[in-house]
Image (cartoon, rainbow, N blue to C red; front, side, top):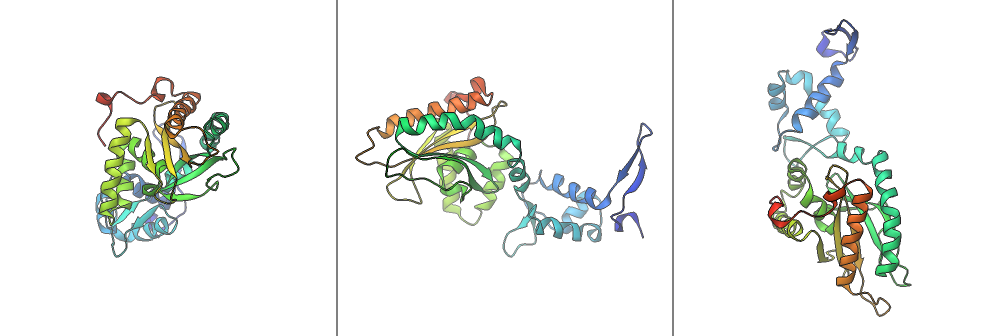
Length: 278
């Protein structure tokens, strides 16, 4: 049996003489993931094998396992594989999410009674916005979202705010999820440009009538987008704080959370001339 056909570790000598081990199946899986992470278009198993200098026989079963576990995906009717955002989702299940919610909780608990509205915090999970923190409005009538709920990123202000500030590779993968929804994709691009210009989004909810979403970005200590803080504004007689006033409060709350995460000056949106194009 050749090394290529076995999952048993193979002893190897490193440059410094220390013994380490090679696990062929694991190395193939990592090679595939790392290679596809840098590709904007899907690739067939044959193309992947050629690019990695391996045979289709070596990689075929590994690709199937990666697909079954959600690390790779194919569009309906296609034989071209793309890398999913599952690794990104797994990363958000670590202590970084706890750090995020711990930093956001006091600010959101102060924001909700001041604004007389509910508010929630969302992160990106695959091509969906995942709700990781929710604070209810103090008023008897309120709108809130369930903790742990997921929504198509393009159908939420939270998702598009995160999209607008994300790196190009992440945006390309999210664009791919909308490849068959050209009108919606164009709308996302237009909204992203406005978000980068204004620093926030105020938009009537696409899911719930009468609700206007006010959504602002949250950045980490490196200045990377990590979440979006959203206030689903519900006008009612008991709510005496105007939408524009709540917008100002939400923007300040987003900056405060970012500062508590170490963003410093990065917590403030850049000047228009310095913002990258959407």
